[in-house]
Length: 147
View (cartoon, rainbow, N blue to C red):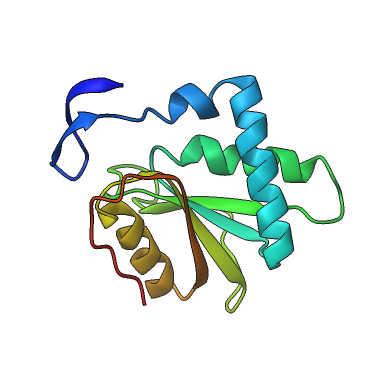
């Protein structure tokens, strides 16, 4: 979309990509999940983490598609910026990998990379072996550096 938008980073932009228009439509969801499952399989990755909230549909679809086969399921978790006020008050939810298992962190749209880097840092602080960072759209407006 084109217009005036404030992004999660606080930056202003003349365009906005709403990933949910793609990932919450059956053909788009199937397209994204199929390509991610194929990629994760090729890389030997059995766990994928998503950045809340844009990547939650993505990792959920990866889990669903990979679960339709019995030999190589991919499990998922997601990270939110803030801890919730109820339940366990956790910043991450879902199926967590054993120590040393390779993990990919997924984001829907990256502008500055701040949310993606925060999720990677949170996962690594929990002891997860983050080996891949994936995004649907890179707006190429930041200087995100990982490793």
